[in-house]
Length: 305
Ligand SMILES: [Zn+2]
Image 1 (cartoon, protein in one colour):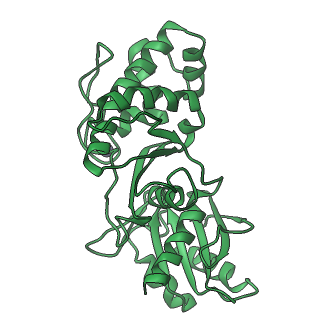
Image 2 (cartoon, protein in one colour; image 1 turned 90 degrees about the horizontal axis):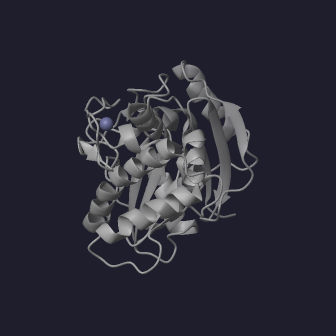
Image 3 (spheres, rainbow, N blue to C red; image 1 turned 45 degrees about the vertical axis):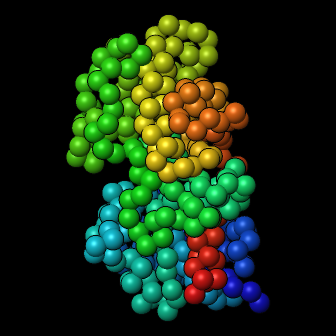
């Protein structure tokens, strides 16, 4: 029997779980609804899933859309009130007797890409999420820079969005993090929609905007042009700063590979290093990067302990 890890990918509505042995990719995925508002039910739900396994796992590893505050050890999780502000790792360890590792979902994505995906041949991998929000994770030598918690790789926040894009002016939009002018407000799927509404006055979802762009519609082309202009500079700075040689992209917008190609072509002329091959590429670590990354992180910690 090898070293067994039970991984959870915990979202606001669903929890997905899978086990893996000795660092292999996780197996069959089971799903259940997230008890998002009841702390007791939340802990019981995870502990029950662990107890039902035929073999007791050696560790639990969790991917979720939040961070462990490095100063307090407490969770910052906007979409799951049941655990926001709690020390989930300690609470779950007390319940199950198993060591518990908690990692931000963008960080799990980056590790999954470095270990199983598009970053396998690369030393420094900057994984980006272009979805509901803009996230990122930084991996060096297959190890997460944020292994002990923290915010490294979070390129979506900070007042950096320029006041002009593609020749058009735009205001610093207010961000959910409390700042204004964050990349998250313009480069996420919601950001693309916000840009389109601002420039054209039309309410379209991101899929419709990208369809319009493909058909050469003027308003959509203007919006996507501004989008590329807004994302390219900050991403090039991230590549310069980190030394990343590959930028795998995940999240809802990344399903549009033609958009990723356009981002790649906008970013590469702006980096100091000359890349004569694609830099921003589709993710290749499979449909469950949260579970794959969480299990890889637990296996790495076990090997180095
Ligand atoms: Zn922000």
